[in-house]
Every structure is written in C-alpha cells, then in structure tokens.
Length: 128
Image 1 (cartoon, rainbow, N blue to C red):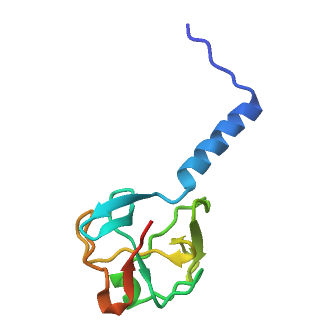
Image 2: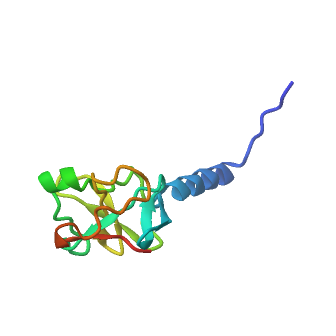
Image 3: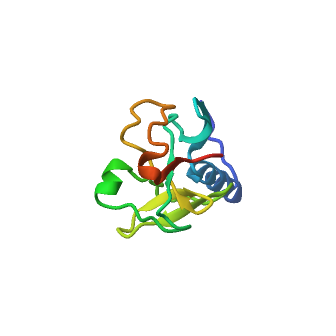
C-alpha cells in the first residue's frame, strides 16, 4: 500500500508559487535568422515592434491588429528580464520588450521568417 507524501503547507505553497512564476514570464527565445538574431515566441515565430507605438502604449488596433496580431500575455503573466506588460485599450494584455509592444506579422507563415521587417517603414524585427 502506498503512503501519501505530505509536504509542509509553506513548502507546498512555495513550490506552486515558483512553478507559476516560472511559467508566467515572457515565453520567448532568441532565433537565428537570415537577418541575424531576433526575438521569437516559443514556437520560433518572429516578433516585431511598431515605430508608431510609445513605450508602454500600443497604437495598433483594428486593421493594423489584424495584420499585426499582438503577442498576448496569458493571465497571471509577470514582468522580468526586460519584458513588460502593456494593457491595450480593450483590456487585453500583450508582451513588450523594454516597454515596446510586441506583434506577429500575418505574412510570416513559418518559424524563423522575417518578412515583416521594414514593412511600411514602420515595423522592425524585435532584437534581443
């Protein structure tokens, strides 16, 4: 018969808190592409910044957000390691690199593509 393992409440709470914090930070990686190292999501899709944004403020909505979907944060996400959270006008929250909101480009259909870099003179790949 198996005996149940009982951990002290404080230790159990600490493990849960640590695990939650570990998974709540920005799920990003550095990807090496044909234009150098860039920031990508956990699946390798490249992220971009919009020159018309300001630190902590997204200015990409409506048609812009359809072409450049925000890199949304999961509930409970925490800032750290240069990644911050930006609350959008509709109350959703997206990740930002050093305050600048991060986006995907609908033209990138595979991990590692950087076809959005320079679009309209307003979009840049996010760099580590």
